[in-house]
Amino acid sequence: MSPGPLKLYSYSRCSTCRKAIAWLDQKAIAYSLVDITLTPPSRAELALAWERLPVPRRLFNTSGLSYRALGPAVVKEMEPEQAIDALSADGKLIRRPFLISSDGSSLLVGFGFDPLAWSQVLVKLLPEPSADPALESGH
View 1 (cartoon, rainbow, N blue to C red):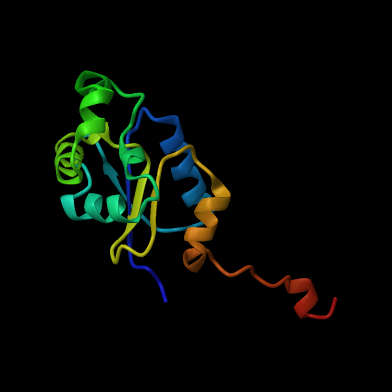
View 2: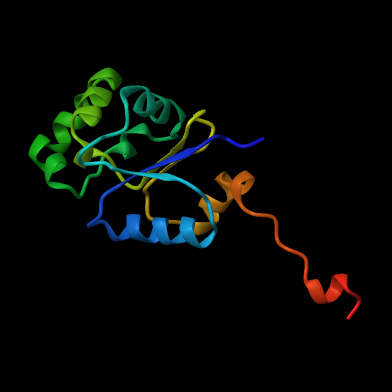
């Protein structure tokens, strides 16, 4: 069963995002590309990520200017609802790339692009390896 269409929230100047896009393209996995700075993930998508990630505060892009302007101490003191509100208001606060399926069953958030982790999460979307035509014809 497919997890549904994928949305990849990305930032064009992010090298990790570019690697993720190249990997998805190379694997022929369909996705819609969304500029995270113009259209951040919805509050519902962020709440789901917050709930599912072992360390939800890793949703924050700690190397970005928005995070530094807010300050690590402020972020640390935020209640989950406040953190989700802040993230949904400023896409530059979110660690990227941020990939989510329409049904929420597939979710990947930055943390350094790891093709093995992506393969494990997106295994249902990877094309079946094609049989070698030489073997099928008996040659």
